[in-house]
Amino acid sequence: MSSVYEKFDLKQVINASGRMTILGVSTPASEVVESVSYGLNHYFEMHDLVKKTGDYIARLLGVESALVVSCASAGIAQCVAATIVKDNPWLLDNLHAAPLTVPHEVVVPKGHNVNYGAPVGSMVALGGGRLVEAGYSNECSPAQLAAAITPSTAALLYVKSHHCVQKSHLSVAQAADVARQHNLPLIVDAAAEEDLQCYYQMGADLVIYSGAKAIEGPGSGLVIGRSRYVEWVTLQSKGIGRAMKIGKEGILGLTEAIERYLTQPKISGSEMAAHMSPFIEQLNQLDGVSARVVWDAAGRDIARTEIHFDEAVTGWSTGDLVQALKNGDIAIYFRGYKSNESIIEADVRSVSAEQLQIIFNRIQTLLATGSRA
Image (cartoon, rainbow, N blue to C red; front, side, top):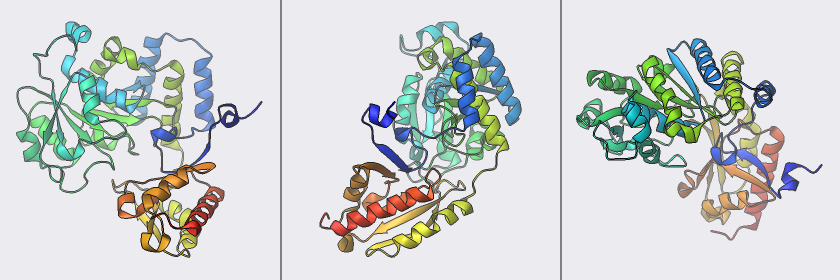
């Protein structure tokens, strides 16, 4: 039988951009795959499966309650809906049927109102909320967050992500203090974050993770938090969450992945840097190219290769070069957020030494053609 790539005429991909949704996020371990397979081949009372796997995950993490959802985006929408609907059965059935008279505004620092592949505001709206920005794109203090709160506020939302403005913004703990002072829940979107406990411990009432990113589970999401709020999120399975339901295989696969994540040794940033060292040395031998180790802007222990191109020397615009790397026989994806500054980054967590050599060879070949700036 031909490979999936041949069957559907797909390109093979070298993922030097990190655990990104556009590339399928991650490749789960065999134990996780086995749990997914087991789930696919057996029946369960789904209410019981949801409840008892949630209880099991909560015990593993030392939190009050947990719930597996279909993805982090669904987690945002369902958490917003939960803080608006609570346990009101009429609202559960009629969230979008008429203008809301209950509090439904969700306050977010302006620098956190980002597009992570879809706008944060779209997920808030899907949950019945209206996004209200606090502070400025380059500044949000606790006082500025509090100033945006009105009687119509249902929740505060904090987005912990490299996509967000990192400077001059309040911390999760400070946002939790503001929430407590105003008797409001704090929702933290921590989709790609690696610490599954710290934001809950800082005082967040609901914390959302992607199951397929740092945890390396199947396509899924995780919501943890205070029992009352997680119960309200669970109720959304009979509301907007019905369109976002996750299958039995995803629930079991993520539960296994979390257990494995907590017990298996993780690759450190220093190990990533050592893995990149020969690649960086090769790049620095190319005319117009300089490479170095940089660290994750959001503070995670992730080392990456930063590659700077002198476009006057290389003869390529960096944006065109990024596109050409994607368009080859093997599609090579980098982190191109700074391509307008003639910089790209390589995340090597999913890249072998052999693949790093393929990447170098491809860059070297493209630069030899020149005349594309």
